[in-house]
Length: 289
Image (cartoon, rainbow, N blue to C red; front, top):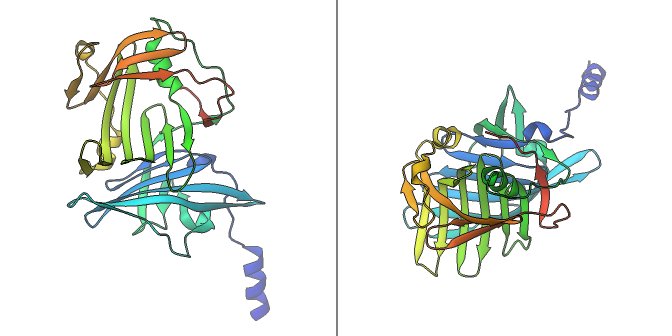
C-alpha cells in the first residue's frame, strides 16, 4: 500500500508555470487591481481601511519562475500616512505558483492579505521592439496611445523606484521621488483631440504641494473595467476640463517625434520611443479601440 501511494505521488507532481503569457494583462475585483507583465507584477489591494501598492519582479531559473519582492507601500485611508512594506522571509522570493494561480479564467492571489479572486479586464500581448509611428496632425490619437505602451524603467533602485506601465486602456505609476511618493492606476483613452485620463486608484504624498491622498473607487472592478466616454467639445488647448468621466488633456502641438498636450497647469510632452530605447524594457502590441 505504501509503495502504491509513493508511486501515485511521483506520477502526479505539481505542474509548474513555465510561461506567463496567460497571465499578461490587467486583472481586478472590487478591492484589487493587478497588472502582470513578463517582468513585473504590480498589485493594488484595499483591506481594513488601508491600500497597499506592491511591486514584484519575475525571475526565471531553469524551469521555475520566481516572484521576488521589489518594493511596496501601505497607505492609511484615514490618516493618509504611509509606511514601507517589509516582506516576511516567507514571501521575499517564492515560486510564482505560490503567489498566484489561474483557473477557469480567474486569477487567484495566494499571497494577498486575504485570498483574492480577480477577473481579466484587459488582455495585452508582449512583443519585440518595433518602430513607433511618426506624429502628424492626422494620427495624434494613435501616437499618444502607442508611444505610452509598455514597461518604462526610469529608476530601478528599490529605495527610489520609478516604473511606469502603459497598456492600451490603462496606465500605472509606481514611483518614489524626492519629496513625493506616487502610486496610481487609471484608465486612459486617446484620440486626435488629446487624451482623457481617469484615475480609479490614487496614492499620493507630495511634500511640494502638501497633498496627501489615498483613494480607491468603491467598486474598483466596475470602474476599472468600464469604458471612458469622450466628449470632443471638452478638448480645448488652453483649458483643462475636470469631468466625471476624467480629465481632458487637450492636444496643443506636435513635431514628428513629440506631442504636447495641456496637462492642467503645465504642458506635458510625450516623446516617440526609439526602437533601441533602453528605458522601455517591455513592448506591447498596439490595439485600436
